[in-house]
Each structure stands twice: as structure tokens, then as C-alpha cells.
Amino acid sequence: GNSVTQMEGPVTLSEEAFLTINCTYTATGYPSLFWYVQYPGEGLQLLLKATKADDKGSNKGFEATYRKETTSFHLEKGSVQVSDSAVYFCALSGDYKLSFGAGTTVTVRA
Amino acid sequence: DVKVTQSSRYLVKRTGEKVFLECVQDMDHENMFWYRQDPGLGLRLIYFSYDVKMKEKGDIPEGYSVSREKKERFSLILESASTNQTSMYLCAISPPKRGEKLFFGSGTQLSVL
Image 1 (cartoon, rainbow over the protein chains, first blue to last red):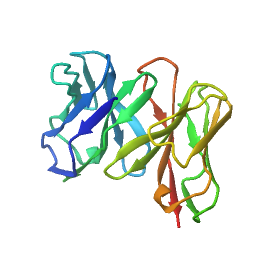
Image 2 (image 1 turned 180 degrees about the vertical axis):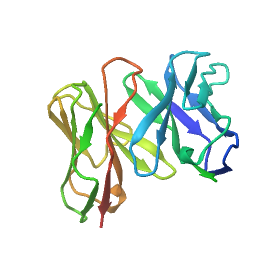
Image 3 (image 1 turned 45 degrees about the vertical axis):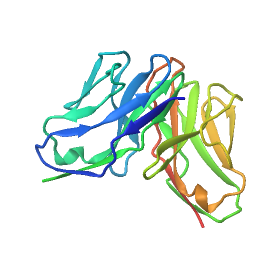
């Protein structure tokens, strides 16, 4: 079945540091890939998505590239801010439902 | 703005009680989902529904049932709550097109004592 393996946290960074969160997947067919973010006290919201191989999703300075050869969708941001402190989830869509990774808690210190 | 409304933000119940969690959407989307979120385990799918009166088991349906009598409302039922069902419960919706994103409610933190 479909599954997502995500880098374990927590991750603590200083402002303006580079952030990478690794995500690899196992799937049949051609899934779409997503990163969702959950800010403290809020619900999950879509951060970015990619629907086919070599697509790059980007939003709010975050980027992730759909790599079919390595079955990966790593999230990156070049210079994080305190406001990026959140839990990040990698997800994969098979048919109509999403399979999620375990989540990575990121804390950015000023 | 998409609205996915969950009836309670926090809920405390006793072991053995029957618990209803309600989710209402205003987007007329066909697909509705119930997930539970636990630290270190991420989100796990309990049940989903792609139409009125239709339901499909997710990855962890044991101990739960669902009801979808109207398109906009999807209820999660714990027939006899147990302490291992203490969790954050998230409702989500999506349009019927494959690969579309989910819209989430704010969640219900359920504690079973």
C-alpha cells in the first residue's frame, strides 16, 4: 500500500538558517505529493503540492521537488523565520484519500 | 473561504460512553474524511465517505463507525469510548477529483477518562 516516511523531529533552528525536512514515499501508480503545515493552535493547511515527476511546488519561500527516481519529496527553505515554527506533514494521494507521514515539529528561535 | 466546522474543540468523556463527533461543510464537496492525529504517528485515516450514505473503512476503523445522512454532514461515532481513543480528531473534505487537496477543520481534542 501507499506510505510516507518523514524525517523525525523535533528540529530546532535559528532564524535565517536553512531548513530541510526529508520525505520518501512508497506508492503504486502516479500519486500526487503534498506538504501540509499545522501552526500552533490551528488546523492543517496545504503548504505546497506537486502532481507529477520533476514538478516543483513552492509557497511562502518553501520548495519541494517530486523526484520519482529517488521516490522523494524533500521540503526546503533557505532562510527560516520564527513564524515558520510549526508541524510539517508530508502526504501522498492515492485515489481520493491521503496518506500522511508522522509529522516533523520545527521550532525557529530568534 | 472554505468552512469545515467541527462541533466541539475540546471534549471529555468517560470510558464506555457513546460519543458523537460532528463535522459540517459549506462547500458541497462529495468527499469527507475522519482522521485521528497522535504525536509520532501523524494522521491516520479512520473512515471516509464519497457520497451520501456511502462509507469506506480507512486504515484504523476498529472501534468507530460513521454516518452520512446529508451531503454536508459527516459524523464519527465511538460506540463505547475507551482510553486509547483519546486523541485529536480531524475532519477533512475534498472535491471528487483525484489528487485534490484536503480542507481541514480545526479538530476536536477528545479525552476519554
